Amino acid sequence: MRYLPAVARRLLHCRDFATQEPFDFLGFLDFAPESEAAFDEMLGQLRATPEWTFIDRDIDIRLSRD
Image 1 (cartoon, helix red, strand yellow):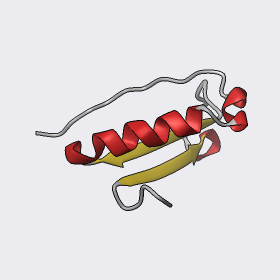
Image 2 (cartoon, rainbow, N blue to C red):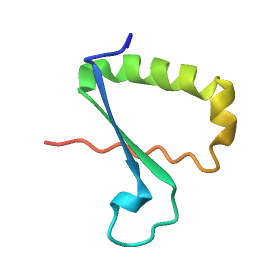
Image 3 (cartoon, helix red, strand yellow):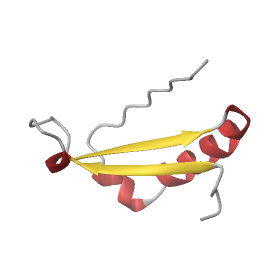
Image 4 (spheres, rainbow, N blue to C red):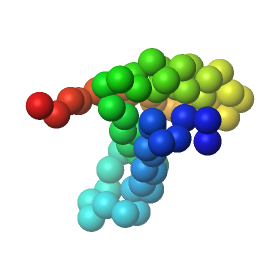
């Protein structure tokens, strides 16, 4: 809650896709360029939690819109 509304989150389970994907869950996190520092801080805190040990693959892809 600390990072709302600077960071918006969407979590999808693969059953929501029409085809079988190699992931169980996909998380999409959106933020404005001026909120990137808050996003990085939040991500660092998430990666330090015990729950993160259940993550098999962590792929950080950042896209921007012109």
